[in-house]
Amino acid sequence: HLLLYRAFGWEDTMPEFAHLPLLLKPEGNGKLSKRDGDRLGFPVFPLEWHDPKSGDVSSGYRESGYLPEAVINFLALLGWNPGNDQEVMSMDELVKLFDLNHCSKSGAKFDYKKGTWFNHEYIMMKPDAELAQLFKPVLAANGVDAAAYSDAYLAKVVSLVKGRVNFVKELWDQSRFFFAAPTQYAEKDVKKRWSEDTPRIMGELITVLEGIADFSSKPSEDIVIGWITEKGYHMGNVMNAFRLAVVGECKGPHMFDITELLGKDETISRIRSAVEKLG
Image (tube, rainbow, N blue to C red):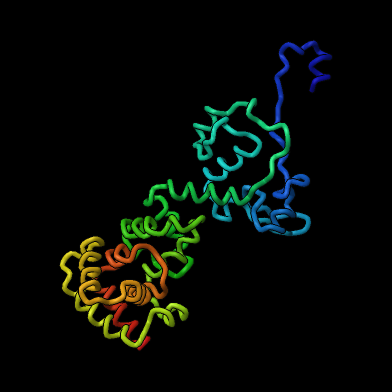
């Protein structure tokens, strides 16, 4: 291009060209290749790519569950920075802040784990109602009819568990108990949290729960915690047995946020089922 512009005497009107630094392997030794993604388990293409010669299929960022805005933000910071510590930026902010003077002259390591971090950050920023819509195909893939639940219910479920995931598809493992009562109970939690006295205590808990008029989170918590304290029971053991009965394992968001969403009848039904199955 330079020789052509000179030959025609167009040097004064010649545009300036620049390019961002070369993308390097995560280890930094050599340029990034498709093999690096295959080797370390991350996408290197924006969309799924089928090699016409070999027939090999390489996953894309879209198919792997990355949000578009997270990918843009991640890629924009490879070999460039805004000159401050800001990392999460919208497209408008990136356009406004971009300056070639802040581009690195050396290659940029492709830190694919940072891409996952960006996806988590954008999941946290996305409105719960939007995430709920993205979650519907995941529910369908796991045999749940999303139409059986209100959008408000799905948005609330998402709000309670999204802090624990990096990808929308991971919401299922964190929230499956909101859509079906447990049929099995984590063995390690049963051994640790379900004792000889637990069925009797769970029976008392059912009576306490039945008497709660306002089953929303804070009022329920105050009453149940007050009952445990009054009876002198071990707080951790009772609450974990309660969680085990309702969730199927000792994990998940705040217990009384769970029970508020499930409702009184479903919560009590699950405790009765656990007592019957665990004995």
